[in-house]
Image 1: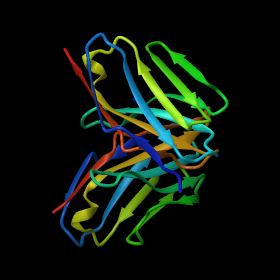
Image 2: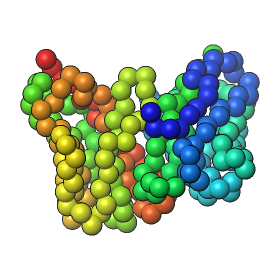
Image 3: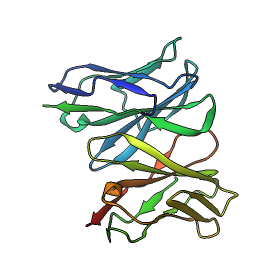
Image 4: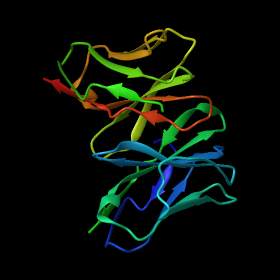
Length: 113
Length: 110
């Protein structure tokens, strides 16, 4: 158990809908990262937050947004969903006592029908 | 941009050593990582190495880094069926996000 939690584990929704994925980092970690894993693109970095502030942006679509709250949990919002958004979405955290390590949550599997 | 390359498949017999290779392009990489992903599971951090090191050993795992050739390898001694998984190589510079390879699927034959 990495200490990073993600909910929900699975999500099935229809095209055009909006969903919110939630992540709680390990205790003491200030950085949260979101990654998307799909068969064709592999593991792609989406966005990073550090202590509530956006720190880095990767290949994140404009339809997607994220935020990190004062209690350090983070949410990834995906809107106007398309079939191609079906993927595993991982959250990772770092900082605290393990600055060099990123620990991953179990992921949320999103299926868009 | 940064790129990390891995071979896609590796098959070994139980009890043999496995060597998974990775090459990267970013000469500024400061940390290199190996993650393991079992079916339906998240990514488990196995080990990482700082770029000024050549080797790191942790029980059955040995990481070798050739910084000149930008080549990283993970050796698993006495490979077991429980080691069957996808292994990802990743690199980062400082506190930047990880850049992953596409993963090597290791199959262990009993």
